[in-house]
Amino acid sequence: MRVVRGAFSGLNHWLAALPDPRCQKMCLYLASHIWWHILALYLFRTGSRNAFDETRNSGAAPWNMGLLCGQPAQDPRFAGQPTVTCSDNAKRHASRVDPAQVMTIPLRMIQQLFKRRMFDGCRLFDHWYVVLVDGTVQEKCRQGFTGQGNSSSGAARFRYVLQAMILGPEGNVFPFLHEFVDMHNPQTQKEDCELRAFMRLSQRLKTLFPRLPICWVGDALYACEPVLKVCHEYGWKYLLTLKEGRQPTTWDEMLKLLPRSRANVVSTQSGPAEAKSRMDYRWVEQVMLGELNTNVILVGEITPQAATLYGFITNFSNLTPDRVITLAGTGRQRHRIEDRFNAEKNHGIGLEHVFCAETRAAKNFYSMMQAAQILWALISQGCCKRIYQWARKATDQGLARAAWEGWRASPWPPDLPPTGQIRFGFT
Image 1 (tube, rainbow, N blue to C red):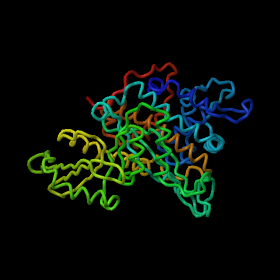
Image 2 (tube, rainbow, N blue to C red; image 1 turned 180 degrees about the vertical axis):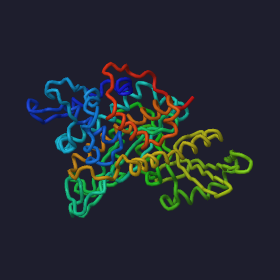
Image 3 (cartoon, rainbow, N blue to C red; image 1 turned 90 degrees about the vertical axis):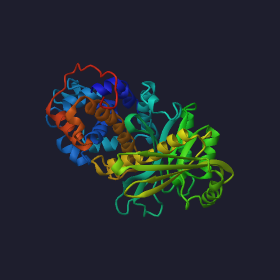
Image 4 (cartoon, one colour; image 1 turned 90 degrees about the horizontal axis):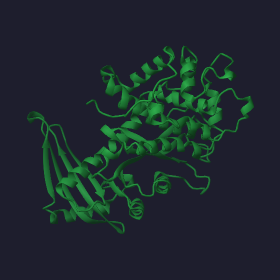
């Protein structure tokens, strides 16, 4: 409650402003109450709608839900018996709202964090905001499921989404924008893919933030000429993984130019003497990728256990040893979006779980999942684990379940003040 009031004081107004096709005179619950039901489903990691419904009205849960959503227990529509709406009602409401409208909720939350200057200390070279991009399976649909945005053959069993996350304090990532990847695009009558989705997402991002300095970090799929042209046109930077099989021509040219760039070498060592690791950096400038020039950075990591080679392409210029080390470290941050997907899939949040078969509702549930992840990062990393020693030893899943028990066990005082400055780190 304190984090919501302090960081997102307008959240209930944003939720209430979403399209509401219901007849208001016949409604028991406010629109913000219904959307908070979906947020709570992901915040407390119950894993499914049925699991959340089992205990949604137990203890103090209705009282606390009312404080959060702005429909307190004293609302005359409750007639003295406040309740939490069921998941069927939430799913029905979500199926009637345009997903493009619901996608604005996590976006507005990120805009508020920009105003709080939360990401300023994480900028690359004190200027470029690092945005990680990757695609994942949103839901594994039921056998034989068909619907809008799925394969016309009726055999599609997956929903995909392209997610962009911004790198925040202490390595935390925050969902920024997302674009749904329809297996069959009804507008173009063609199969959709991650790269087409990236083009749509980049256009939206440029429209929403025309002056935002962005550095894209992505895997080898995005190391292609169309993505580089978009970055050149919009004035963005990129740090993309280079693999021999993805760009064989660029890889071969880099190998030919490498002996001519003998001065472009730097090495570092770290770790204790008995387990010291060595990092060797090499780079080559002005390598052709299609019709464009790019720079290639190679990083060899040697540890007592293994030797690993990393490759990146970038349009950062003036590559000095210090800049190369910084760029390579930033490129390796790509694993954080994969770690986030793994947590959402395997730690109770429910990514890939079919919360609802209807496509529009499924998209809106995913948008609410991302809004919940922004809120949870502030609650767990920016508040609980910084303030309470015991919270640092708890997993996020365990902390979420403890929060759900507390939600039901103890009514909150209605006059809680908003939290102050949100800081990450334990010092």
